[in-house]
Length: 91
Image: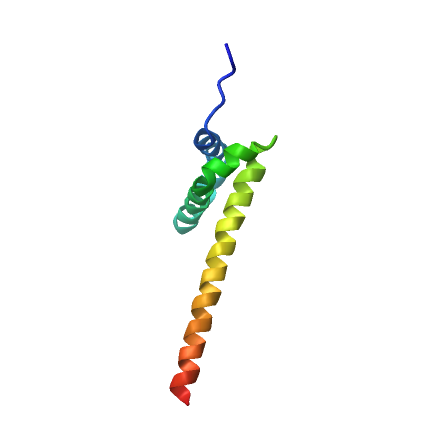
């Protein structure tokens, strides 16, 4: 019989669990942000499973960084729009 390969969801959950003591040490609002980071990693399950790095935490961190970069890009776009609207209103 072949080996059973854990799903990447399970891998992320196991990694989050391994950080549980760290999480418990955080303030409540930081615990919520911590949880959001691991939820962000779950947005890229297929890519992470496909890459299947030797150290899965590398894929988790890359997924989190990707989601953070996307948020930054969207916020920059929205700020640019607001600035353009403001400039037009001032004319």
